[in-house]
Amino acid sequence: MSYIERVWEKVSQRNAGEVEFLQAVREVFDSLEPVMERNPQYEAAGILERIVEPERQIIFRVPWVDDQGKAQVNRGFRFEFNSALGPYKGGLRFHPSVNQSVLKFLGFEQVFKNSLTTLMMGGGKGGSDFDPKGKSDNEVMHFCQSFMTELQRHIGHHTDVPAGDIGVGARELGYMFGQYKRIRNEFTGVLTGKGITWGGSLIRPEATGYGTVYFAEEMLKTRDEKLEGKVCTISGSGNVAQFAAEKLNQLGAKVVSLSDSGGTIYDPAGIDAEKLAWVMELKNRRRGRIKEYTEKFGGEYLEGERPWSIKCDCAFPCATQNELNGEEAQTLLDNGCYVVSEGANMPSDPDAVNIFIDSKILYAPGKAANAGGVSTSYLEMRQNSSRNNWTRERVDKKLNEIMVNIHAATRAAAAEYGEPDNYVMGANIAGFTKVANAMLDQGIV
Ligand code: NDP
Ligand code: 2IT
Image (cartoon, rainbow, N blue to C red; front, side, top):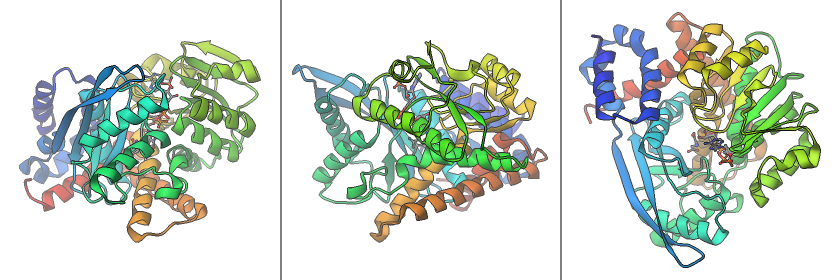
């Protein structure tokens, strides 16, 4: 049995039942077989055994009082996965589906994503099974304060720097930052995605969506093509989806769908800048459901459905994990889609990933295509350390350069192992190699 398969057997036994985590590990392992053959030093130093085990796992009670005066309890987590390349870095997710498996898959992916950015960041992820949906601002504030009351003892601007993810945006980050500052009596860049007047970076809110589109642009360049005139489907209608749509509009593409957990809206006329501004108001202020879009602008509401049956050239999954299965991947291909750039983390399930790879379309996995968010978080940390503020243009230019570099590094790693068009293999190998070599240098810790 190969080194990889021996480690896989142990990982799957030790983490039995953690479906999402094991899915993420298997995908990375599937890319690494030729790397292990060429580099026996990794086995000798137990790199794989160590890289699948978080350095530290923190699980805690989050008690809070709701608007009726009733005590509520949620579970809080932070997985500090790997610090070989820098302080732990990665978002916080608040969603009822959050559990150990989901956050471990996200933390594991984050290690390779952050390595791919070439910036100095380790990987981590955290969150809670708290559901901000339907809660008052007051309840969200009390929850965030309680969550941070515990989390603050584990994080710091040189140690572990959380940010947003599903269910954690400007409002939640503000409440958490306020509580951190109150307890620790320090104003530091301990969180990223901060408000612009209190340490945030311009373009951080836009960065993940913009970056995902920049990555698609780079992939299209390999075929001498542009995004202009392309019909694009997007899933989700949160932070990543909104700014992917904005950038696609700016580049002359036509966005025809958005979705949320209730269903999909299909607007064949295109979701232009004006309609998108309305969606942002709906989602970020009124916190309403996407189906209201069709009442306002027409088009179709596909209740309970995802956007993948809609004919398009390019698809941007920007909602959540496993939101695109094998059957849907095949439907996309049958309808002529040939670019898939993942804004979400692990949105394509393993069947879909295999179908995309075998079909040789331009398919970019999340850990490469959505790395613009965490990269711009790093630019925010840089601005905080130097007490400087960069202009929009400067941050956006840097973000674009980083995405161009990630694209090039991904292709180069894939080419080195004989599959230049396989972005999954390229991202996994390039991400892994840098972390593994740093771990070798730093000894068995
Ligand atoms: P938001 O909370 O802003 O938006 C999430 C969107 O996805 C909402 O439209 C939501 O619909 C939908 N969604 C969430 N969970 C589900 C589900 N289980 N089924 C169907 N739809 C769902 O989150 P973000 O936009 O920040 O994150 C979206 C994805 O991008 C996630 O995978 C995240 O990990 C990834 N990502 C985010 C980054 C960031 O900087 N924010 C960086 C890199 C990746 P509803 O409101 O109905 O729940
Ligand atoms: O999945 C991700 O990369 C994020 N949610 C962003 C992490 C960050 O630290 O900005």
